[in-house]
Every structure is written in C-alpha cells, then in structure tokens.
Picture 1 (tube, one colour):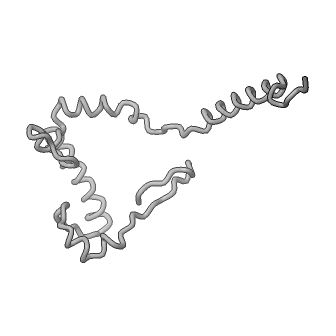
Picture 2 (picture 1 turned 180 degrees about the vertical axis):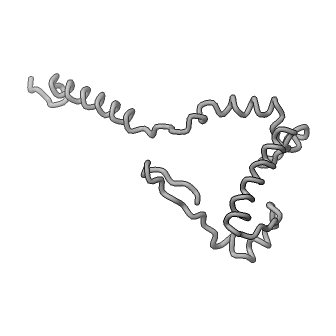
Picture 3 (picture 1 turned 45 degrees about the horizontal axis):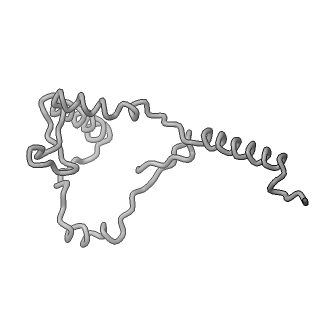
Amino acid sequence: AEKRPKDDPELKESIAKLTELKKALEDLSRPVETNPFVLQRAELEDIAKRRFFFRPAFDIYGGTAGFFTYGPPGAALKANIIALWRRHFVIEENLLEIEDPTIMPHDVLKTSGHVDRFNDFMVKDTKQEDKFYRA
C-alpha cells in the first residue's frame, strides 16, 4: 500500500510539536495584568460596601447603574480628593472651576454636537505600547 502524507508518523509528530509550541507561544503572548488590585477588586468592593464607603444608590429599590450613595468614610474620602484636585488645578494652575449637572437631556447633547461628533481622546502607554487610555 502507498504511504499517504497524513499517515506519516514523522509528520504527525512534527504537527503535534508545532501545535504544542503554538499553545506555549499564545500563553506567553497574553497581556500581563500590571494593576495589583484587579484580582482583588471583588474583595475591595465588598469591604468598601460593608464599611459603608459607598453603596449603589437606591439600593433598596433595585439600584440604578452608575449612581452611588456615599457613607461617612466615603463622603470624607470624596471631599479630600476634591480638595486635592482644587488645590492643584484651581490654586496652583489658576484654572477656573465650574459645576454643571452630570446628567443632561439628550437634546442638550445633540445641540452641542456631542451626539454626532464627540470622541474621547486616547493616549498610548509609553511603557506598554499595546495599551491605550482615555485622555
């Protein structure tokens, strides 16, 4: 009987070896998480909620995505962060501070051009060139 290429044991062995090497390369090519808190995020959120830094707003009614109620330690932390931000940008950089509603009606966003033309500017990480972040 004539030997067919797919029955060649040397070819089968080479294909198996290449498949194994390809898998090893894929494992090495996976992005490495550099943020040490990503793996503990669920634990961190749990302890922050238990100590009432925050909780989802309107939690007893099922909550509303993106809105939070801050407890005493969370409110104090938020106030400290805002004070630090003001000290840097308003006092040191001489920028003006304004306050506007965070949630806007669709008509305002449409009229301002945000609906049709808004794009977040992206910046490239200089150390990990495959990563991009919002500016």
